[in-house]
Image (cartoon, rainbow, N blue to C red):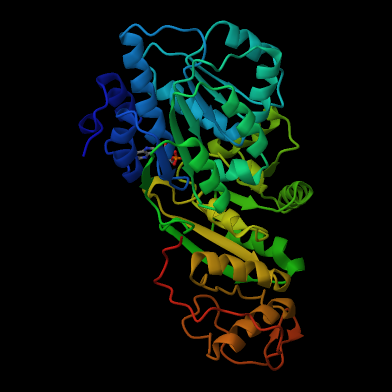
Length: 439
Ligand code: AMP
């Protein structure tokens, strides 16, 4: 299947081809013809599947053909709502790249930067507007944007917008749109809230789903390293050095923790910087471009900042701390192994994260393989391991890829490990790891 066979016009086919994409991804081959027909669409697709081009290409085509037929307005004809500035920027880049050969204009508006240049840009007339909800409403309330001519509405990463509390903003935006329009909603996960939202917005939608819901990207090798909380930073530095990782995205739960970890890595001689919501837009853009160009080896990010980061061929993702929300694990590791590339996701798990790990594995419907790192099997981590052994009633040493610890009673970091100690059982499901489908 080629892009031309999907019904895309020559300018668009040329633009994707010049990006080096010769074949549509699964979501593209399913979504593009549907969107071109003018139908509403519900896209169940995680990041890294090519979903941005899946809606951008047909959106450009529809707008361009209507312009060819004489449609004229200075107000936005397509509106793409995204949860974060980074995702808005990424969609904006795709619109600009794929739309090169077409006479359509686009702009991105988000908060955290001056509103004046955005007002000037909007005043000059725009076809495609990519926006985060809050700043868009600021413009609407000042009368600097008119959404009454919107023909196509895209809600990208709708689940994330709901997680971030944008539901009221979204509802306010919807009231500013004309009743007759095409609606495209993309979400990596399906909660009842998403269902409610889509029921209220989409009209007889075509459901296009490429990855199984709530499952992790399949090309990603996942592994978890049990480790004492206090030894995580040392282990991370060791993994980066021993593995000769040159580009690694590390997740931290808090902004403060992200800053501290980046600094500590720098102290260890590993170039690092942090990216999170408290940083200015220019600092975030610089951190990302330094990371992409290889100037900085490690990017430490919080979950919110991670959404919309498009870094192609990202080889390694590390969960320095497990996320509180299990779905975030799927989003985090979706940053690697993108669009057919392979990647590895490492989780550093301390005993206090046992419950979080259990929730994640429940969502994935499978266990994350354990790989102990020599010298890091400390008491605190043992609690995690023992609990796993207890619940399974088997010997987990067979098949370990790291270690070489065959007997008990050896010392580790100078501490005797002693007989296995019983801790809170690690309630595993009896576990059919093949049943990955999830509803
Ligand atoms: P997305 O799911 O939109 O975040 O896209 C993930 C990555 O896949 C981005 O780096 C895209 O540039 C890339 N991509 C999009 N379409 C294709 C394609 N047809 N073939 C290969 N890579 C693609």
